[in-house]
Length: 319
Ligand SMILES: Nc1ncnc2c1ncn2[C@@H]1O[C@H](COP(=O)(O)OP(=O)(O)O)[C@@H](O)[C@H]1O
Ligand SMILES: [Mg+2]
Image 1 (cartoon, rainbow, N blue to C red):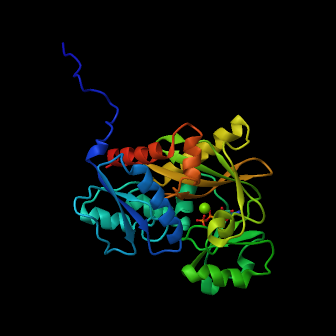
Image 2 (image 1 turned 120 degrees about the horizontal axis):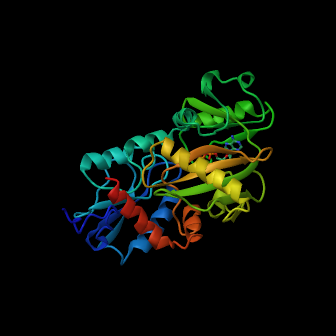
Image 3 (image 1 turned 180 degrees about the horizontal axis):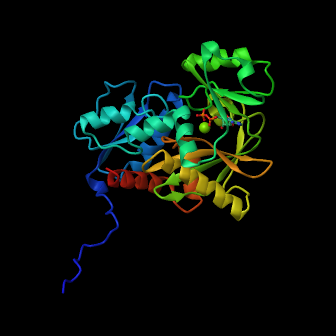
């Protein structure tokens, strides 16, 4: 008869935080640089005193230099060279462990066209779309109201909501500044929601209510533009049944893209039938102390520093 080995616990062990020399990767070269710098400052504050050392590294491209002895990169870069898989590839090449989604899932999640194709195969509900080449894009090929967006951007950069064909040319010209492919989606009228995922857990749903217009860059970051504003409600005022459906659809979207560790899934809840439609999975969601993912974590009693440490723990266990 064999006795169970003493250490046979299936739960992954918590990392030895006191052995971690963490470089918080900040900024990045993309349009979300300012937000990334704020995220990184929050993470540095949270980790200070909780790991062996923390440094902030301003990254503008692949030639960034990490302090000697760094044994974990905390990725706080949204968008280009942070969220799109290229930074992950560079860190893999250097053999540096890092937080968040790996290279392949980052690439998939960052490309809204590729994500939506994967959502369809996995049965995740997402708005009807048309993929157009900017130089051939014609208002006749879509229906209105619709949303024109660059497929590989964030922070609502280049996103235009059109009720009618009026404004089509200007929207196409603006969205195509970021690349030749355009994603046009059917406009979904309803509540805007976002759902944080940490490990296997869908956090409480957040309802995002811009004070006017849609959730564009000025309503997202009033501190940046000095105008706009948004109210956030967490947990969202939804029935238990709808809440569960939204969380389940978000978790399905996160898993359909093979995302590891954590994400924040943007969802629209269609007004006419309360069905959730997934817009995208953000693999490096905003992580300032007042950002949405920390807000959702706080709603289950997980404070900001605990969330940062949880992300580290899950990331080290996903290697
Ligand atoms: N199909 C859609 N119907 C209605 N609103 C949309 C749609 N797509 C995007 N939006 C609005 O535009 C915002 C940004 O779109 P999203 O696809 O999440 O791109 P980003 O990566 O820039 O956040 C959303 O938060 C929402 O307010
Ligand atoms: Mg979004």
